[in-house]
Image 1 (cartoon, helix red, strand yellow):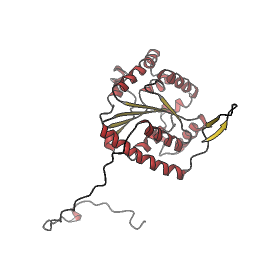
Image 2 (cartoon, one colour):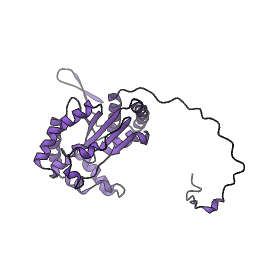
Image 3 (cartoon, rainbow, N blue to C red):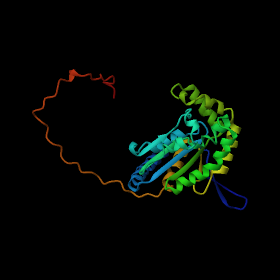
Image 4 (cartoon, rainbow, N blue to C red):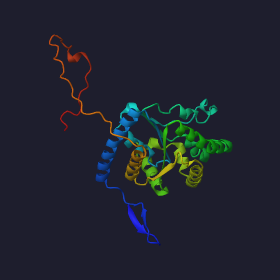
Length: 280
């Protein structure tokens, strides 16, 4: 972090524009991911229910942060929820209903790659909801989240902020890369043209839904490496946990092989040829 001195002599920290060193990033990520493993053991041991939701503009880096969080974890203890647009039936339901269906059980973490805040963002900007539905959401959402917290759910809300220039750079990169082009949906291309509208609805969303029981935590994400480390570190600091990882296991000796069992010939089944034979 760089520092600058204010008019009254107070030292004020400002985010640096420098990209985080790759070697440092990888080492710190390994350290934090080991702590995530400890956290997951603790969540399971204590029967905690954790919801972590990620919002932000397209190409803000939400998927990258989620990927680094779940990388070291036991897949049986977390779920990533990225819902498609609602079906005709879901459109007739209570707005929060389809999200509630994915909430965690005891000992589980659920990460939302976009969440019920779609209504306060893309649905508002693109005209997918009515004015009445929009304002009703902003009114009811704080009460909905207070109810979740009162029920014992740990709710963390992260908003990744990407600059106009960096978002355009990432869009152009995706457009040129056929392996990543699927990330550009027609809606993404349309929202690219509505930067100011998204800024307005974000400000309104934060004004109405940044509540003491469930604060918004904003992360500048022009530097993806910094954003990932900042988010993981905050997550670990926000949920107190203890190291309950089981001790090293002593495996018993394996039983002796059955000398009387004769396996069938290998050519009875299909075995794929190794195309990399000779490559090291």
